Image 1 (cartoon, rainbow, N blue to C red):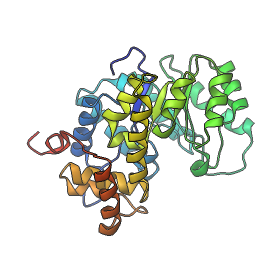
Image 2: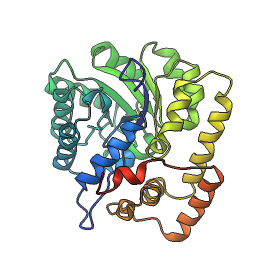
Image 3: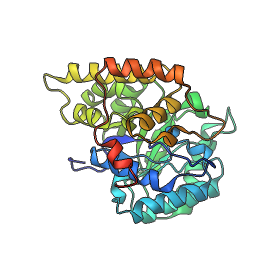
Amino acid sequence: MPHTDPLSGVFAPVLTPFTPRLAPDRTLFVRFCHWLIGQGVGLAVFGTNSEANSLSVEEKLDLLAALLDAGIAPERLMPGTGACAIPDAVRLSSAAARAGTAAALMLPPFYYKGVSEDGVFAYYADVIERVGNQRFRICLYHIPHLSGVAITRTLIARLIARYPKTVVGIKDSGGDFANTRAMLDEFPGFRVFCGSETFLTETLAHGGAGCISAAANVNPAAILQAFLHAGDSATPTRQTGLNAVRKALEQAPMIASLKRCVAHYGQAPGFARPRPPLIQLDDDAWARVSAALDQADFSMPGLAAALSSNS
């Protein structure tokens, strides 16, 4: 990205294409990632919108290796490595650390609900100790409406105090900017990313690091421009444009909407296919999303050529 800190800016939680037999489509995945890099954003592979928790550890390791083999710089990557089982999180996190990725985006263990803060702290501490790599950096992932496990500010303070060179940031997908603002105020220098570009202007105005947003899969260049030029006279207009695209995409379930969008603009019908239990967006729902995107003057330049078998 055209700024100096690899752990800042805009990251896309990259969509995962699947073959008709529901295996990850390695080739299409790499091509899509190259297009996103060409648009200037980083890659938060194996995030929520990647269907990460429908992927096995082996599948994630294979896709990470495919990106590195394809020449994508590791510092452009922030792979999701959180898992319910500590050994799985350690395997994924160790691979990220060895590769030299910008950080690992780490969910808390999310199956058991109502767990104590001490338990969540112990989980992160055990993963860090087992990885045992000074290159390992963590961006915590707060998404309580899905994980059921909140990343509280007292937990952040404890983790920073114990592991100041490892626990370096957070993605706040809680949907409450007051919480994001409180993190920014309480932890100077801690890299706070909003989980939606809807909050990008406010986040940057208070010293945030950027955003890790689902819509960066389909609207990367516009979100990046809003990041790079935050605070200038055109900022409100840019934010309004980002919000219009986001609103269009949210007229249907987000993952299915995003995948159908890439399939349409990329002329790659198979990209629309999710892995069950998610299902593909039907034509009626896509018609509503598409009409709203047209009203927002939306496009994805160069995507079809990037995804083509001739590319």
